Length: 396
Image (cartoon, rainbow, N blue to C red; front, side):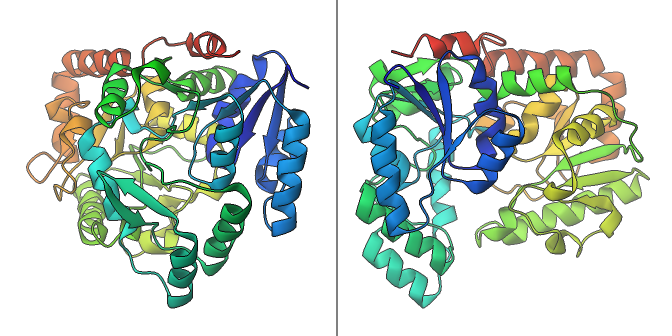
């Protein structure tokens, strides 16, 4: 199988991007996730499942992966000992898809440390002390955010078998052969963080193109419910540094919609618990990730008047659908100027610019707002519909 290109997937988060690469010649999908394996199998993509849930699993994984001996391996993250080992032993292309709005600057990298300071239970900290799963941000090291004892144990087992090195959480690819990134802005951030120019290749966004293809193939659904405002939420409440300000944003958003007599739906992130949001609104205004399909998301967003978000990678959906998008900033939480620059100033929600005001401005200034948003999309998502061919050029 020396001529094979392995597409390695560790998380359902990357399924859409991985499936889009199926048109590459001689590909083999490989995963250590049972959930990914079942989904790929249901689509007749003939995946291989190599588990890494025990010491024995990890030993067999290395043995069988070496037997495959792929010419290329495509990865989507490098936050595990498994992906670290693959990068150290095979020619790898790391595709960075974890970028809301296709934006990345040093502020974003610095802010990541806030996600690693929540104290863990004693036994979790003990395993972390032994396994050292740290993240390096600007020459300082941080432990991973709160984790279960099983997660810490598995990390230790995997590190024993596969090895591991400190990684940049926001800047994956330090050990990859080449890195495929969205645009020049992201490339410059990588360079400022010490990455070699030679391994950085601007290809456009595989996730943007994959989403566009999904939308084209989606048949219209007869929605039981369409709403005025869709809010793509994020699990900021899981981090101590942003819990209060995110709660303020959610409460302000709900009050804002009620005062302006607007219907709304919160579309929750996969890691979010609906119980948190039920403190602010009725159950019927919340849709958990497992309650909906990508097709339903497309239709709900398409039928809405406005999409509200903070830093969701799901922003790619309204961008593809050319829907007006609002940046929520009632609390001025994490005022990331780089991200805010993506939005027309009339499309930033704060105390003196509520949703009612935004909708009025959309009527009176619709052309300028649409032009601004379309320009930002073209600037930050270059090579639309060409990303796959540019990634193919990186293969051996």
